[in-house]
Length: 528
Image (cartoon, rainbow, N blue to C red; front, top):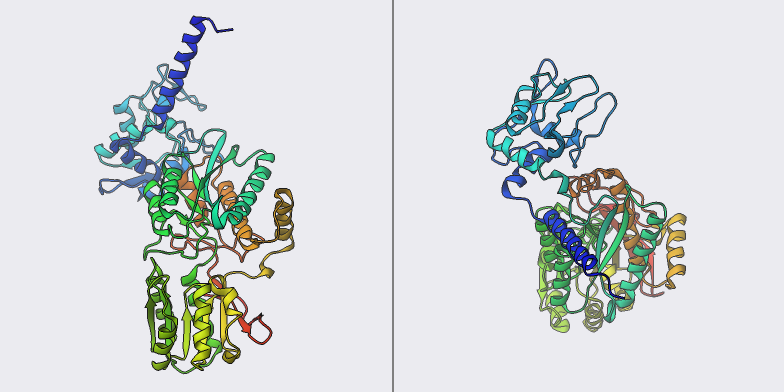
């Protein structure tokens, strides 16, 4: 039976009103409101003009950045009592309510307008001329900055970060569901979903249930990039956890920075893709650059060679030249000045010619940054050339083929790994085993499962520390303040304002070519 016409019209009107409300809340801040938000959150002036605050009866001068409004009034402006201090609600709807204000201490005053509020900031008096609480600083700032602050307070109640509401938190990830990496993506997704289910079963985090949005990563780089852009910009996610970003490292970093989306635990072998720290991206484990530094430290301290000729061999792929340069510098810092980078065309390594060139140049140590298949080719021609250099490589890149290198290399093959099985504690093994059983996963892809689990644990801990008054800025601060965080499946993770890789180090294993197995060659080597 069709609904009455009046009912249908009312339903359409309600839908339109809801849509209009959603659009109003989603509307971006104006430039003036953005400036006011900076004053509110950071206590600094976007104009570059000095912003000072005066506190206490003696009006001691301090930098405004040490007393931003958000510290006491919260990201939502509602104020959070702390001990005897009870910061007020400074949302504009509250400040300007028509019937005025009566405070617990008996102080009363009329509603604020823009002029009286600005005067209260500078004079320390309310709209009736009464003294404000001594805990409330008096500010010295330009009229332009004051007006911007007022403009932002008029928007603060609807200025939730994307993906955040009063009772929900929308988190995204980028995983393969088809192609050669489908099984790996399934394993990572199962771990993320299983742990989020545990979190939601406990009532959620900071009063909010978590929703996971999964975008598709594929062998088609252009398609993966488009999906990543949609995830970051259109899917309205608060943060992204454990995304597969291999081959998209630069683009993902730029997206995170431009759209201010925190990314926790991206799965990639390339971490820092630029000299500057990306403020929004937090890696769990070190990548190729860091593992190369681990190998350089190991070689210099354990192999006892005197300034050998070292070649860092790498394919001409995006980011690999920077990684090779980092490795060369690491060797040179340890006094091995005859270290150079040698490149070859990506996907077309001339193995025989390359071996001949390196042998003729007197190379005694080879740090190889190529693929498993390329290492296999290299081994064949090293054997044929009757050449016995030391061979070093990140194990996550060439672990299989390194075991097949010719016996003639003896005990001269070493691999670096960011983690070892012993890093997984009993608690971690139990958690991963539970995920595997509930999702029907096998023991394969244990490393990727551990990486995803560490990333979601890291995000969970930072969200707890950020608290109910949640924002992306508070999440970033919480992550930066984590020190020696135990994930139960990786080495302890630490971050800071200038540190975005949680575990800075790795283990070196030697390859027993006779037994075709790996043997420990070092303990955990820190490179901080």
